[in-house]
Amino acid sequence: MNWNSFVDFIQKIAAGTSIFMNCILTILILFKSPKQLGSYKYLMIYIVWFEILYSILDVIITPIMFSHESIVMVIVFKKYSPIPHQVLLILIAAYGACFGISMGIFGLHFIYRYFVSTGSNYMSTFKKGRIFYWMLIPIIYGLIWGSVCFFLLGPSEEINHIVANKLMLTFGWEIHDISYLGPYFYQIQPDGSYKIGWNSVVGVVIAWTILFSSLVAIIYCGIKCYLYINSMINITNSSVSKNLRNLQAQLFYALVTQTAIPVILMHIPLSIVILFSFLDKDLGTLSGITSITISLFPALDPLPTMFIIKNYRTTIFGKII
Image (tube, rainbow, N blue to C red; front, side):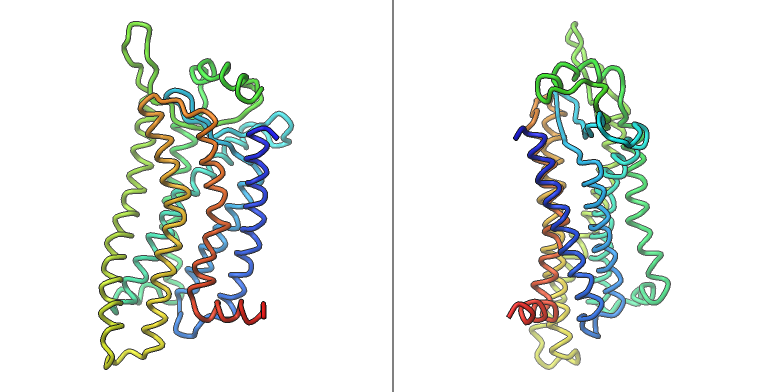
């Protein structure tokens, strides 16, 4: 089995596992959620179905990441695909948009948990139909990230010329056999000067600004939630019931773990690949490991919620026993 076939195999296994696990989690959320969960279960369903759709997209295009010099490419082998080239480019951009959506979703979850934990008046904005306005934030993040991929990080004749031989040696692919998107930072000229790919630089700056804004919300709200929940748990005479305090702690720790998974599997590997390319260091097929870790994210992400939330955990183990 060659490298791209191995990556494709892992992606299909991960996608099948993700769809199965997230369907199980959907049933648990709908039928076994504590009554105190309130509107939060809509946010939980939101992320579950995002991960299912992401897995389906991953199977459809089976992308593989590849870096060469200062170029990072998300490649789809199109030779035997019935999907037209332009549509494949849109699907690759949608795949990139999933990064923006994921960070928007987790930032939104932390904001919600912060409002709930502190009893903020802003909780009213999450009730009834108004919660769907909040749900637009990750979609906007995704649209910006996807637009950056499609309009600023598209294919070019320069990239084709630089990577054509490398693709043939590595995969046995002709340049016209693939569709791809990705940044091209700079090319060293014969006189030692650099030709900067400004579209790529601007695109990556926009994308990582979005990422940074989400991380700020996660870190700020996460620290506030942790301090508040700890103080609430330690107050035995609190007017808040013990069950509710325990539930808040379970939801918070599940959310922290659930957020760590995409950070470890998606954002850190991608950041490493981009950093090496920016330094003009060739990772070649090693960058394909990122394709594997990214595909594992939606398969593993349901597990913290399923096993940390007591109602879900007892239901699962009760069924097994």
